[in-house]
Each structure stands twice: as structure tokens, then as C-alpha cells.
Amino acid sequence: MLLEVSRIIVPPGQTVVLENINWSEFEAILDDLGENRGSRIAYDNGKLEIMTPLPEHEVNKEYISDFVKVLLEELDIEFCPLGSTTFKNQAMFKGIEPDSCFYIKNEAAVRGKNKLDLTIDPPPDLALEIDITNRSHPEIYQALGVPELWQYSKDKLKFLLLVDGEYIESKTSANFPNFSLLEVIPQYLNQCRTEGRNKGMRAFRSWVKEQLSN
Picture (tube, rainbow, N blue to C red):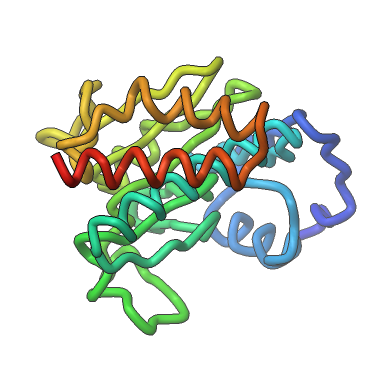
């Protein structure tokens, strides 16, 4: 691989697109980029995108991920948060790094594993994409078989559920069907932004507990 991708500077909020990248080149680029980086990648049939998120993107990602953790903790459901782990499948020529992801129903299948192979292991049960810079690749998640994809863009949350191999938009989350999260999560996300993270998270946890008691 003649191109030293690690030397390419991608400013926050910007995307670099590389065309006609074969699988071995894709693997070499991942190695060149390394694991300790702020950029995200998406690879689909030879097209590679490298994006560096904005601070707003990262804040929303962290807050929404924490809301998911609160829900799972209060429901006493074991889960494995894998953040922006690289998921790829050579047979499909696809790869993606979600903003955040969780193994929930399949947590036991990946527990203790330091490396995942989607030709053997299941995909994450829930993936999150924060679409601040129009970077969203539902077709890749769909192909990889991710059962549920959350998209957050312009203060709105969207749930996509995998049905017969295709995503359909849903008003409820498959993982949290008894919670009205479409309206509630943006509300508490805004509270975290305006009143502070801890206050917002405590308020959200109290709301979850109230729903469970009812």
C-alpha cells in the first residue's frame, strides 16, 4: 500500500472518500490508521469513507449511549458496550465503525472475546449513528444483519428495525418496547446539554424507574 493514510489530516466534520479500495488495501488502511484515533470508517464495495466527528457529534453519542446503559441497568439486563468497534465482513465487502453499539440479547455469545469475526459471531444487537455531517450508512448495517439501528439527527431520534433483511422505521425500540423513547431521549439529551450531564442522567434514571414501577 503506497498511500500512507495515517498522514492524511481529516478536519473535524469532514470526510475523505477513497474509491476502488480492495479488501487487502482496506485491511492495510485500518492497520495504518491504528486503533487509537478519532476518525470513523465506512467501507462498502470498494468505497472507503474516513470521517472525523465534530465535538457536538461526540457529546450526543456519549449522552445517548449513557441513556441506553441506564435502561439496561434498570432492567437488569446484561450487556456488552463495544463503542466504535470495527465490524467487517469480507464476503460482503463491507465494514463499519458505529458511533456506539451494544450486545444485548447476544451478550453471552461475545462475553470475554477480545476479537470478533462476523462470519462466526453475531453482529451487535443495537447500533447508534449520530448524523451531524450526513454520515449514515444504514445499508451497511442492514447487510451485516444488525437488528436495530438508532439514528439521531437534527434533534430527532429514529429507530430502524431489521425485518426480512430490510430496515423499517418504528415508533418503538425492539430492545425497549415498553418505553416511549422517541420523544423522551431528545428531551433528556437537551436537559444534559443545558443543565449538566449528571443532573440530566439522574432525571432520566428516575423517569425509567417510574415507568418500571407503573
